[in-house]
Length: 454
Image (cartoon, helix red, strand yellow):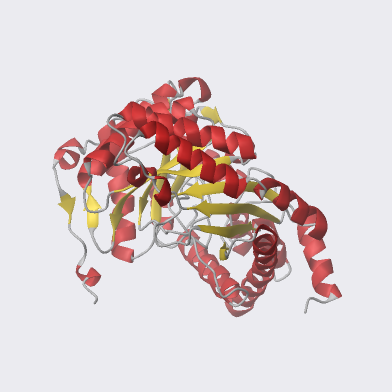
């Protein structure tokens, strides 16, 4: 039972501490829309998406009004299009046609993003996968709401370095094709290792082939709530600090569980998971970096940052797991730069570098996220950064990701602006020493020895 004190606590979290349900995401399987004709495939997937998601936005708004909980985004994820288009797409333009259809569907049902323009290539690329990957720059430049992801590595299969090399080129081309918006297309493109099948957060969401035909998942977020709770135990021991974070994560996740179950009841589709990631926004007071400062650091990036982030991530997971039987997705602390005002400030102050962010990704929820780099960064350097991050995920048996924006025409210290939840960011320096001979090697980096568990 929910008592009056919990209701009052939730109201405080919403009104003063930027708490919200970040997204309700409807996952839709498109496996039954596969056809040998691309026109027919587009017709079938349009029909299914519009039928399943017709009431998604309205239902989310009604739940928000009934319970007084802000639900910021309503989104859709679909089966990786690399699988759907394999039998009908003969060239990159055919895939772009599917992307345009997805964009039209998203606009018609009113969701802000649709994810799943994706390829899964951990063991190597099929011809269809490669076609989709090469179509990404054109697809993202011609659509508004489509998000794309490519999973290039896993603990079980290693890293497909051919795909890593190609993604460096694709990211640069995507930035150039969206030059007028500071490379905005790259903000909707994620490179993964160990991508989960049930992630509700964009830009990396897709509906995994192991999932039900249609499923509803919720992503909650409350960095401001966690920060406010930690303020109440200033100077306390680590034991008290950990207990405080756990209890707060429990409260946040319970709200997400309530919204997920209610959405499932009203829409008639099964509830999937609650993703309890601490996802920041550019709003003041809604920052993971500010939590780290409240724990005791002068700025994110100071000595002790990785340890503090590890503590935070672990306690968030422990608290959330007690609040819901179905915690999934990414679930932890995101550390994007452009979407977190505290991270932006730390970069400006010189406390936070790309190398320090890479170290932090060993213990956080995802990886190098929403980081602007100079527009003249070579494709091989981008591929090298991707390879490093994929290796961290592969060896540590965790999800890691890269969302880099090589800002066209911008140099270190310049600012890029994306607006909304995507925020703005200073262009960060990258290591300029060459890695092209390493990236030019073909094939795969083998899976680590601890992958052989059976």
